[in-house]
Amino acid sequence: MVPARAENVAVLRRAISGIGESVGMEEAGLGDLQTIITEAAMNVVVHAYDGGDGPLEVTASRSGHSLEIVVRDHGSGFRPRPADPDRGELRLGLPLIAALSDGFQISGGPGRGTEVRVSKRIVGDEEAVEAPAEDLVAGDGTRLSFATDVPVAPVLSRVIGMLASRADLSIDRLADSQLLGDAVSTTGSSEFTDGRVDVEVFDREGCLEIRVGPLVPGAAERLVKGMELPRPLAGSLRALASGISVAEGDGGSERLLIEVEERR
Amino acid sequence: MVSLRGEHDLTTAPVLREKTESAIADGVGLVIDLSEAEFIDSSIIGAVLDARKRAGESGIGFAVALGDGEPPVRRVLEVTGLKQNLPVRESREEAVAQVQAGPEAPPKGEG
Image (tube, rainbow over all chains, first blue to last red; front, side, top):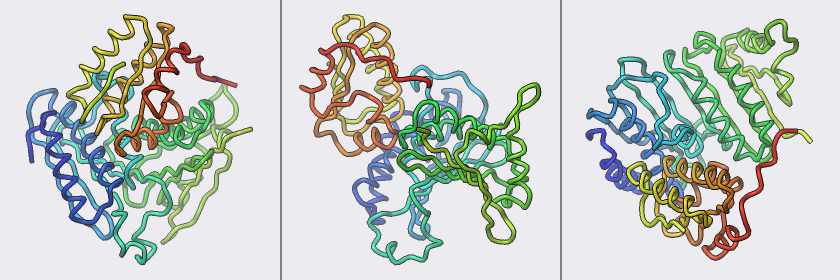
């Protein structure tokens, strides 16, 4: 635990690099860890205590074949705030964490502080090659998980924007992806089997895939129905997607798959 | 040319902004040299993007030099999709040439 001050963040970078090395993370991964911890810690420094002092807790532990980093503060929690000129209007911190990790969970709320839990597979771990499939996060996507009182829309929108950009989607398709993301963001946490809003975003060249779930039965259909535009407009946001489908999961749960491909 | 050496994050972003502002005010063209930067974070990226926008508004050339840059810097630019998006050149010389060739064309837009 350190005071939430910008000058302490460089120290955290060294520390996380050392921890990464000790669990066998290779070079590129170590660099990613330094960026992840910087972004998460800077969010606390800038936002948690309104520029004043307060505790910043960081823990890092091995969980299976991944390193799990938790950054916690006891500050004011998530609330809409004016853009900070030094951080730019863009708020790239969380999308950058998403792009460099296997995913993050964000929990907390007004007055309860915020916790960001980042998971990163230890590449360079020889055992990971033979690990059972469940231990490995499929593909190159990122998994986002939001507690009930954390606003999903702004974070999801920016993560989608960054991954769509990485997938080389045109500006139009990037915007379409964000609109679809906004529709997903309206899904209540009670529609998910674990009570948290869970979304995965996968990017590959020319295509972005948004996977929503695990959802309770029927939730996928309700989500798609919710994409219909209000009167007097006609049509549905689903027309923006290249494909929408529902996949069945364990125990009757569902996943909604939304694909956005570049249109020629 | 504004060169970043070593680690740069929120604590050094204001200095970067000052330097890019004065380079833009000089009207000559701006190269942000990251070839000796060991680390950059999103506040630095934000400053770079803002500088690019201001350079465009002022009608002057803009480029980023990556050079033999440390892997974390290159990786951040790749992972954010910015390496394709920004005028990034592999050497200082190429970046300078890019800037001397004039301001960037406006991005291909809608339709």
